[in-house]
Length: 156
Image (cartoon, rainbow, N blue to C red; front, side):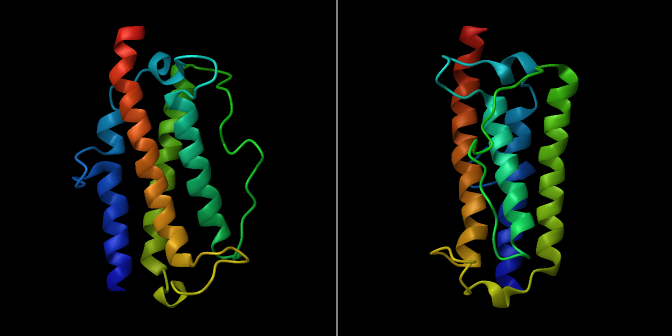
């Protein structure tokens, strides 16, 4: 259970704790308005909101897929246009992020580490690599969100 505790701690720190990279989701998103979140630098880029939906989608599908030893990735890759950039919908997205964090936290409470070295379905990676992959994926996209936030005040 020691490794599970370490991974759980990393997930918690990147969400609302003090991670080594110095930024977490809660801090980064606390002052983002729906207008900022929906803003696209150009039509070929993703908005903060689209990136956040992408993060949440992958967190959900992987967590749901772990017990079944597989998941299906949608063609849109959880990157879809924001249809309703309202305050209510932005709050709903932030709640989904928080809920996904809670779901992962609960998952770690009952995780059997014996699966870590097993291959995940027909994929060329193990359960351990998949779980850490979600953590890395979150951090990668948190970096993108951080950069977008830095340039958005100049554009809006």
